[in-house]
Image 1: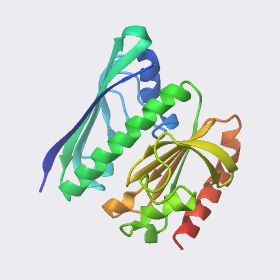
Image 2: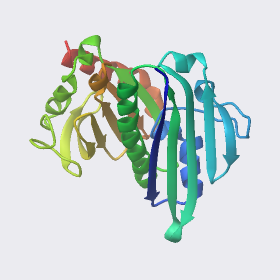
Image 3: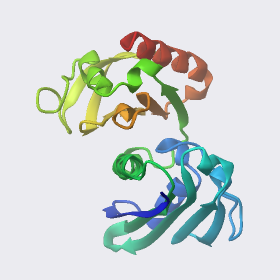
Length: 250
């Protein structure tokens, strides 16, 4: 049954509105995935959306109604609304609203979108704090079908020596040494961790691990790499992480 939803988040970040605007409209590969906005009201946006508000650096709204991309994931309406206001000391206040209509599996769809929102917006804040303005290479890797079985994500932490959960291993804020595919042993900060997501940040990259098995989908990984020359080894990096995931769930 079709039903509306709304997910609202508000937060402050130590970055001026212009930098936040740049992150959500231009440098999206640094924290989300590469996407483009035609810079005007009525312009085109990703996934068949239309820009319904374009007021840099304060307001961006993009709305999709029944494009094929939405129907494939059980939606008929999707809207993203960003409001950015300046605060003292060069900071910004951000209000983010994701709304729309899910037409199937409403509880799972909402739960997944709600929890993903926290992880994505956390990654946005990490980007603004540590990598703002730096060009990024974004790489997505998806685990095999075996990783869609509930409980599969619990294998990710131990594979890096971090324990199965924050309760028995590395927790948010901990500095760790991890052996990353295509990189080798390196220092990292655990910048996000709960039962469904893990975030690792190094000096030149953010590694995001998604426990989508909680919603019947394979475990996924998103890499946001900022090192010079990262684009030149993207294919090798993708293959290294795909091999790692396939081996973990063989």
